[in-house]
Image (cartoon, rainbow, N blue to C red; front, side, top):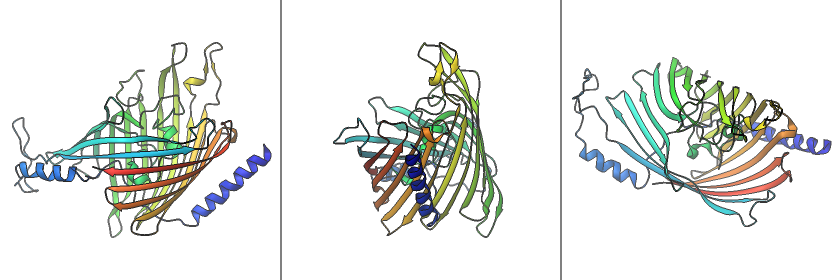
Length: 398
């Protein structure tokens, strides 16, 4: 056990040093999508049918139930991600498996210039599901309001779209602290990282020649029960962040989350657990080079660790995780990413899972991306701790 821990620590330190030697910036995108091969023609056709807005941008806006102008042509888009996955994990299919990872379509637009709407649907399963529905008021950069169902603003990765992450999956800390996929620290089932609520955000104190904001803030109130669900415990989750950008492209961010989760245990009894989470993150973006690093900590029990007979929790009530990721542009169509990614289920090395990943991204067209990913996995909770994984994914905007 001691030698195994020493080997794992040595590999981790070596991997982190190799990543930090190539510190580099990355253009980081939020959860917005561009039009694809088919929707570009659809959007152009719709634009021709829409009456042009001939009013000046400085003209006084008119409001009223009979107003029909000041509406943009709706923009349609969609994308699909197909995946082949092979894993050396005990019990995994030896020949690997093919799957549709994502199949989504959306529509967005503006009303009265200051209001932006967006609806996104998931069609991967037999029954289509709602992913996002939002309305944003964006009149001022310093103060904007977003309401609806959207991704929780905790960690850099959760609000980002799959095209821009650079890897075939999000970092473990983003997956398991936002209920993106799998069970999160509190026992909440997968919610694609989303919840329903309202969020305030804004950019403050422009500096430098490019007038980038020195400070960005986000503060939201959510049901705390995930996507397409109403509040089930009469409480709310508060999620916020402060982003400092001292020079253009360099962000240092503090995230916070205070709330609770209520779910049913095996006996059918509803259990409520608190969740207090914080994260410290940094990223640097410039000229297609990429670097980002995040650490997050969670305090609060998991409802699935509740002993109904003794009426007590059997877990420590703590979890943490971190990652360091780097992307290096090699050619106009090839960018290679690497990541050291660790999550500790109970904030101890004995409950840790670590992935060391190398991922060539081959983008032959704006709407076509091929991705090959190799993972070396050290999972201390698995029957076979060390194993390899290989993923091949295709991204297409349609």
